[in-house]
Structures are given as C-alpha cells and as structure tokens.
Image (tube, rainbow, N blue to C red; front, side):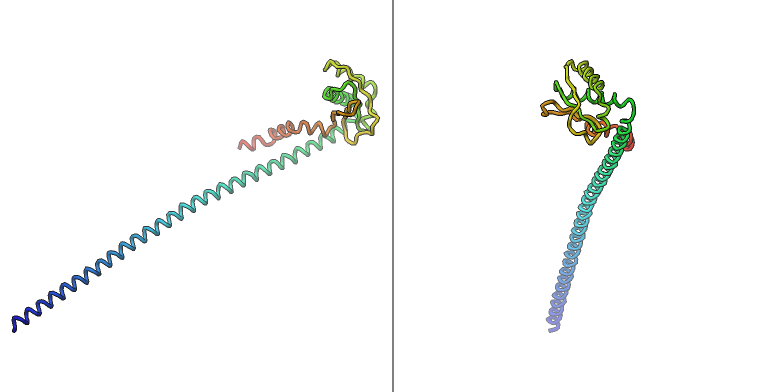
Length: 215
C-alpha cells in the first residue's frame, strides 16, 4: 500500500510539473507574440511617420515654389507698372515740350520734316496737309514747296501738297490725306510717340532697370 501511495504521489508531481511547464511555455509564447506585435507596431508607426514627413517635405517644397513664383510674378507686375508710369510721364513731358516748340522760330522746319516723312510714307501723288490751328499758321506755301522738293529728293517721286480745307486738328502734328480720301498718314506727336513706344520703353528699361534686374 505504501509503495502504491508513493507511486501515486510521484505521478501527481509529474503531472503538476508538466502542467507548470506547459503554463510557462504558453506564457512565454504569449510574451514573445506580444513583443513581436509591439515591434511590428513600432515599425509601422515609424513607417507612417516617415511617410508623413516625406509628404510634408514635398508639400512644403511645392508651397515654397508656389510662393516664390507668386512673389516673382508680383515683382515683375509691379516693375512693369512702374515702367509704364515712367513711360507715360516721359511721353507727357515730351508732348508738353513739343507744344512749347510751336512758338519758336525753328518749329516750321520741324513741321516740314514731318510733312516730308508723312508724304513719303503715304506714297500718294497728291495729298492735303492738315495740322492744329496754331501749326496751320506756319504751313505757308514756302514750307509746302520745300517739303515737295525734299520728297522729290528722297523718293524720286513728284508730289503735290496743298493745305487741307478740313477743320484744324485737335492734337499737335500733321496728317496727310490722299486727294481721293482713301488713305492717310498720321504724323501727330502722340502717334509718333506710339510708333516709337517699344524703343522708348527699351531705352527707359536699360537706363533705369537693367542694373536692378542683373542684381
């Protein structure tokens, strides 16, 4: 009986030991799985964070480029506005200066040169010359005859120029109209400035803005 009892105790002890070992094994496996999950989760979190950082950097660069581009465009826009204001101011000063020239003795020569230029550009055999009221007083037969001679010298073509019977022009300068009224050449001060505006703008830009742009 005693031997049987000892065998029973030994069997129970063995079962308890096995059960304990199995519990420890299960617990250890649970710990290992939990550690793996934590490691995986940590890597996933780091991956998500890095992806977010990369996207943020790309977006920041895009925003920076957009802002820089907008600033550059605004600078160019304002620079053009300043240039346009300066060009207009200079043109206004030229118009005023030219208006003051009407009262000078040499202005008839200026009118003569404009008439020659307009006649050559018009290319008509006969044309009528018109100008503003103060200028029409200077358009004598002598001035028109000299203009005819200059056109002949420059183009080799004989032309006839007569003073227009139309109302005087409102603006300074001359307009030549062919006898049939179909064509005309405008050589008024404002029109002359308009024809040369590109060159005027380039000169102003080179004089005032070229160094600034290089910087």
